[in-house]
Amino acid sequence: MSLKTKDRDVFDAIAREKERQQNNLEMIASENYTSPAVIEAMGSHLTDKYAEGYPGKRYYGGCENVDVVETLAIERAKKIFGCEHVNVQPHSGTQANLEAYLALIEVGDTLMGMDLSCGGHLSHGHPLNFSGKHFKIVPYGVNRETGRIDFDEVREIALREKPRLIVCGASAYPRAIDFKKFREIADEAGAYLVADIAHIAGLVAKGCHPDPVPYCDVVTTTTHKTLRGPRGGMIMCREKYAKDIDRSVFPGNQGGPLMHVIAAKAVCFKEVLSDEFGEYIKRVVSNSAVLAETLMENGIKLVTDGTDNHIILIDLRPIDVTGKDAEALLQRSGIIANKNTIPYDPQKPFIASGIRLGTPVLTTRGMGADEVRQIGQFISRVLKDRDEKTIAEVKKGIMSLCGRFPVE
Ligand code: DSN
Image 1 (cartoon, rainbow, N blue to C red):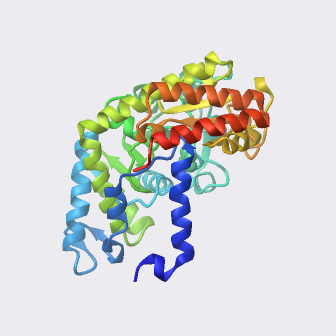
Image 2 (cartoon, rainbow, N blue to C red; image 1 turned 45 degrees about the vertical axis):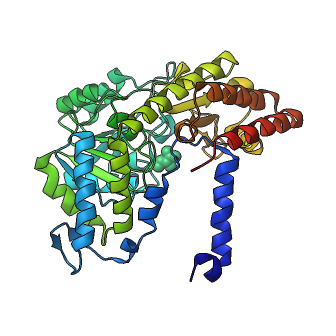
């Protein structure tokens, strides 16, 4: 029986979500629209299968087909990132981080990560997250004036606190991350180095961001952001950590892997290996640069005064509007974004003084520099004017753009 016949409520909510995606500009930097092939793999019978263990070494019978998809995912990921070992089973990026930490260090050890309010991630040491509860956290931030990572400060903290593990990577940092510098500091401090490339994985895959693999003991990522795959995580590491990583994932922190998601990861990785994806990701970055330039030309202040990647972080304080209000104004105009703290934000995270924007979805829809310039002008008008006439005009313009770029 079809979903439509069996459960009209869920069917309708899914249909409305598709319409919402079509009729709005999705600019949340961590989101993307997957291909029909990725969605087909995710919605397959592989969801039915228990497959605890790894290809060829399972605790259940009947794993011959899931072994094929997991092996494909692993081999393709290795080819993309040039890494020695890959585990494609983590259910999420946070889980991948937990598994990476516990493969290398013990509960109670000192872990150094970027403060969430400066662009880091909950799983890099936030007090309410497992990372902050189970490890002694030493945070590092960014320079107050430049908004950029200050390596002198990172080094000073690392040498003083001697963390056993440093995690680098961010979820709201618009600049390139210098993994080589982090490696030098980790070596001086005697720490393991883990890079969380959840946001920039697609850029790393195609050489549009410095490569962490040569410098890090372990690299974690999600697969659903710039990689444009299914919602999930992945861990890459040097061969010498392979057994510890695999044990930390299963049986350490997970049971049965989500084989339908792993199949979709394999499909995503095949897409990433294509030249077409290379063109896509270059355009994500060039669109982000055009958007940053347009916003700044229109008097909008950006943290770090620009971007090197797919992320733009607006500092709203000079135009005297909060992140919460800006998010609502943009949503009424047909632009979906998220309020975000800016470094050393005077506001609480639920109000925030920033808006984070990203170009992955616009680019997936086929938009280029001309459209992004127009969108930058729309955003600037909404944020500065904040009146009904502007919102109505911009909404009309956005609807017309959305009509020209249908979602696959
Ligand atoms: N929530 C994700 C983001 O928006 O960046 C990180 O997990």
